[in-house]
Structures are given as C-alpha cells and as structure tokens.
Image (tube, rainbow, N blue to C red; front, side, top):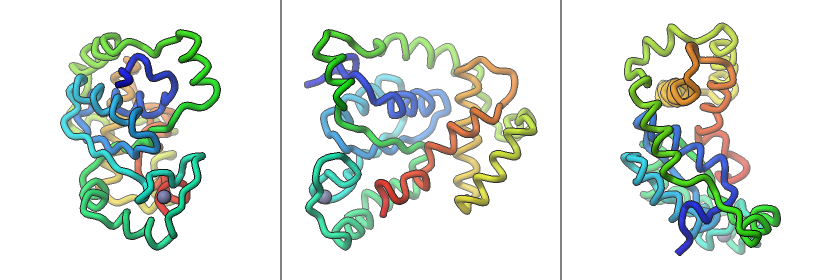
Amino acid sequence: MLSFEELTGNPVAKRAIEVAAVGGLKVALVALDREAARALAEAASALGTGYVFMLTPCPCGNWGSPRPCNCEPEEIKAHQRSVAWKEALREADVWACVHGPDQNELQEFLGGQRGEPLRAIVRRVGAARPWFRERLGEAVQDLTRNARELLLKAAEAYQFSWMDIRCVLRAAEAIRALGDAPTIEAAHVAEAVEYRPQRLRGRIIP
Ligand SMILES: [Zn+2]
C-alpha cells in the first residue's frame, strides 16, 4: 500500500484534511484514485479528523478523471443519489477530490521525491488548534472588509445555505489559525469556499 509520504501531488486534498483537522470539520473525499484516497483517509484519521466520507464519482469510478468513464449520465446521477452521497452532502463540511498521478507527480515519485512527512503536518495542526476559535461570532468579528465582501459574493453565486456559511466560516477560521494571522483575510475565505461541494458542480457532480 502507498503511504501518505509516498503520495506526491494532491496538494488540495492534503490541505483540506489539514484544515478539517484544525477546525474539527468532517471531510468528504471524492476518490478519482482509490489508492491515493485511502492514503489520505488514513492520514486524516492520524490527524484526528473525526469523520471522513469516502465517495466514488460514478459506478465505474472514473467520472471527472482523465480515464474514460463508461457510465450513462442517468447512472451517474443515480449513483450520486445513493445513501452514501446523500449523507455526505448533508454532513460533510470540507470537500476535496483525490486525483491519480499526473506525469509530473509520477516523475517526482519515480525520482525518489516524497511528500511532506505526516508528522510535520501533525505538528502544524497541533500548533494551530489552540488558536482556533469555536465561536462563530468571534470569527465573524475578525473578517476583513474584503473577506466579508467575498463571502457575500460567493453566497450569492452559489446560493449558500446557513450550513454553507457556517462551514466556510469555520474553514476560513482554521486557515487563519494555521497561518497565525490576526484577522480572516479574503484569501482565507476564497480557499474555504473552494471546499464546498458547489465547487464540484459540472466537474464531479453533474
Ligand atoms: Zn463511470
């Protein structure tokens, strides 16, 4: 089995489990590559992330990846209406796709390069956790003006529910704590918005 360190690439999914670990958030990993997703799910549990949903995009597992998917559009929709998907859409705070290796990542791997050691991420999460504020009100107070404007724009563009708003604010607060920043900046909100499932529409979610 591939270990977390052996997995070169997948920076977004790696970052997502780190943010979730700091913010006490539930993660949904859409496995476009099962081996990589398994390594990431193990790392998430080592980081103390409470709940990880593992999802496949379609019955064959290739929808949204460079590999050919032979599922019919109706089959994909039915697959994503399954109990597992419904539960994840209801419960998961932070969403990320886990990709297979691209040419660069494979070259790095074959050249002996390794990803960041898990213990380094465990240390970073441990250092940030005491600075994460559970109370949403405190995070809201510390949004910069640009961050607030960006959140308003995203809420309108994606028709955010209160659940979306809570998830984005908690993720943005976790990102702030990881960066040891005094306020929640627009960049923190922008990254947090990327972790909502609405961002997967048209790519993974039909
Ligand atoms: Zn398929």
